[in-house]
Image (cartoon, rainbow, N blue to C red):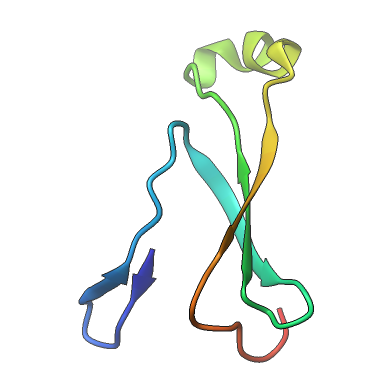
Amino acid sequence: MRVAEGGAILDRIQLDRPCFATMLGGPDRCTLFSMANQFLGVDKLDEMLAMRSGEVLSAQVRTPGAGWP
């Protein structure tokens, strides 16, 4: 989600699973990389990890990243 100063949502990417980390990268810093995985709840972390269903997703965005992490 890209949010303007003041809180207005400017852009949003819908995913079919929870996303827990994002980073803008690529040569022009316009590729959004997202780490996503199925989430079964904190009581089922071992089962969730055993599924090995984590993915790195990517999407092109209009606004490049600024600065460095």
